[in-house]
Image (tube, rainbow, N blue to C red; front, side, top):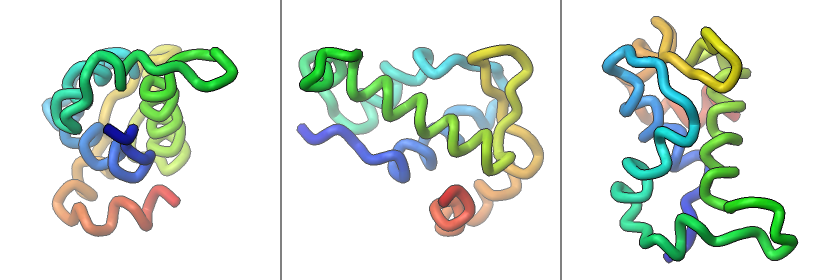
Length: 101
């Protein structure tokens, strides 16, 4: 299966954060893989260069965009938590992609 794009990951990542918990990018790997019906091979597939797993990298980039768009806070290095703006934007999911461009 094809690894999902950043825009697809962002929406689901916000949904997973809406409970208010603090999470690391790696914490999203299993729930997102299940949501996108990715198997272990898809999840663990490395870049052609061998510089790390493609799926985890896409998750981390998604969080970079969420952070730059001020939809999540970073209470600690590598830890993310949805904020009021992110929660508000979840009410209109169609706007998430344009907000995080």
